[in-house]
Length: 182
Image (cartoon, one colour):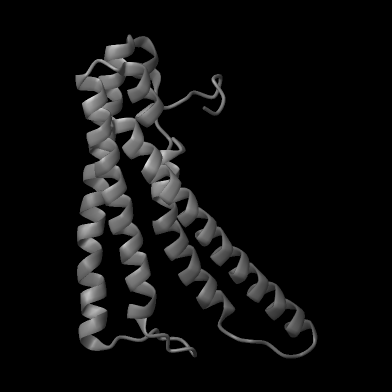
């Protein structure tokens, strides 16, 4: 059951990663077009602002994908010296700390969006972008990351409680530079 849950969320996150990548590619195309236009004496204007927004949104949504693909950095000096059970406990602790941190960030993002909605805040730029347009998908990405972190933590904890350390390692473990990618 736990592995099926993890496979399902991985599939969702791969689709989200593809959409996020498409958004980044579209942003790069707009920036490239703006550079070409500048050489011709014209410009869209605001591409630096738009690309900053796209990067913030892509980062918040991309974190869940990175989590499930074991791409987050971890210092594993203690982990390498432990047996399977010790590694599983270190991994669970690291996952719990990450999950708590991400949950706190997501929680603290809401007041930022709420204030922008309440005040009708706009960027102090020539585009005067309504900030809620950018902050809503950014906030949603952090919520998604927190939800994926909790699901992953719970699934891994269930695997560890069942003594399935290899599967837990595949879910939340890490790999050293000498190991290569999983």
